[in-house]
Length: 120
Image 1: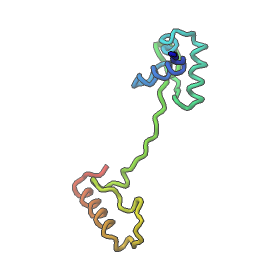
Image 2: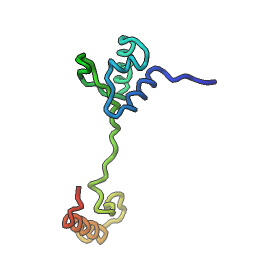
Image 3: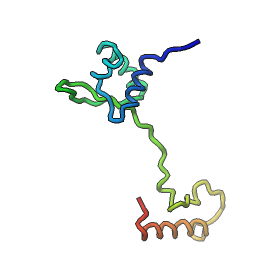
Image 4: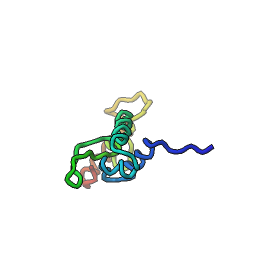
């Protein structure tokens, strides 16, 4: 049994595939629906927190620029020193940081990165 894609899924895919976003007044034409139906589709996507909407002007007409909401990705930059991951992250050793060899090596690597300008 074949299921067709919902209008919301189609709209979401069109918005996602447009790197700079898509104007709402262009979206309803692409979907071949009227502007009122498009507003309902956009409202559903906004309520599901899948897209963002900001006021814009397209060809002299006020409209909205629709973009896919960026997924927040975890950043581990502060735990990296060059290629070394912080030895303290997930460490189960019962050591004192002042005398931990692993931590000392990681901090020395931080100093090397700073001297060579490899920090972000």
